[in-house]
Length: 336
Image (cartoon, rainbow, N blue to C red):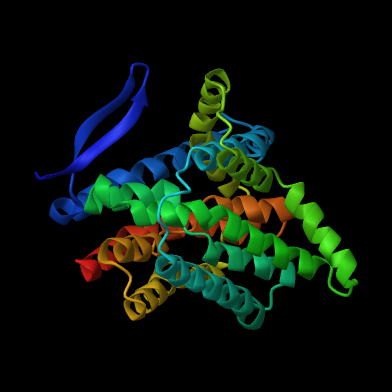
């Protein structure tokens, strides 16, 4: 077994580290090590609601906690502490986000033309094709594959990911919901939706603190850390619970489209553009691998926020995450 860098986690006495296995040696095993825990938490939520150990109303409360409090705190803290002064490679960002934008448009148009969905549903489905799981899957898989010293590209993408995806998704959704209104009314609706959204508020507040140089008092930072630790487990548990309510019957073709666009087309576009723009190898690998990740839980949060496409979003997150065990294996082989 070959070590490939170190895995760090926060303990009561500080950061503790242990050597990690490199994906080059044990790809399938380490992929399972990363993805299987995600499925277990989702499974706990599913079984808890299915067997009546946890009420459906309770799941809605957990989801609201994750969506309106924990995840915004996570975004705020991550952006507030991020080194925005680090050198950004525009070629990587152009490659990744051009691909993301194309996939959003294709998912939205495909849902409309192929499956005759309402436009609001189409935007939510397009958002599933847009929002890669850059943090929960992208970071650990990239770290295991290439080591902790080769994650600069991942952090570049993550810094822009939520602002870009939510900015695009909310703008298009508000345009669709308010079509026929005047430009001023539309602008007001978009602004109201953006600045009343806890996720966007968390992102903007994080940038404000970071750019102003204001230091977050340690007691507040520690309190935020306690909430942040609950964000992803709560979100995944709630996803498992809501899957009881949104069975994929009748939507499998739509879900298959989301999986193909997100797992295959997005990384292929990043590969082609990154090659054409001569993106440096370490950044190139980070971009392609992050693009190959399944839709993140935020895809369901977005659908739930607007009440459209929730069944497709919930099932797409689950099925695409399972399928990514094999598609990420393929992309790692292509990148090797």
